[in-house]
Image (cartoon, protein in one colour):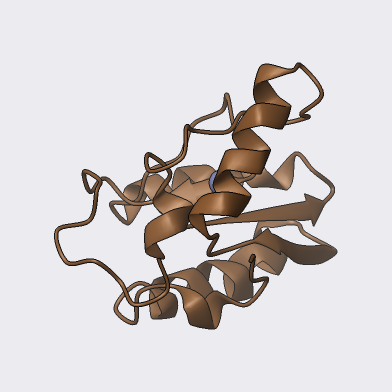
Length: 121
Ligand SMILES: [Zn+2]
């Protein structure tokens, strides 16, 4: 299972994610595409195995260790791709977590496992 809707984020996080997507044109984005939001443990395991095999374009955390499994992260791509660096800077100024080593990935500086198990795990 994998969603492409920001609605599967933790409810408190969604408004901030929505804001960043709406702000993307002001950073120069012609388009924004949400590529991954919340993932099941099984989906994360599959992505991690793909990453370990060297076939993944982007890094993946081990199962149980991804913010995606807790509704605390989403991936998106912009056209042009370089806009992600601007958006990452804005996201960090808001208190979010972002790294130039994984530019599509936006999350929050909250340790996981998330203290309260979410219903979709
Ligand atoms: Zn991600």
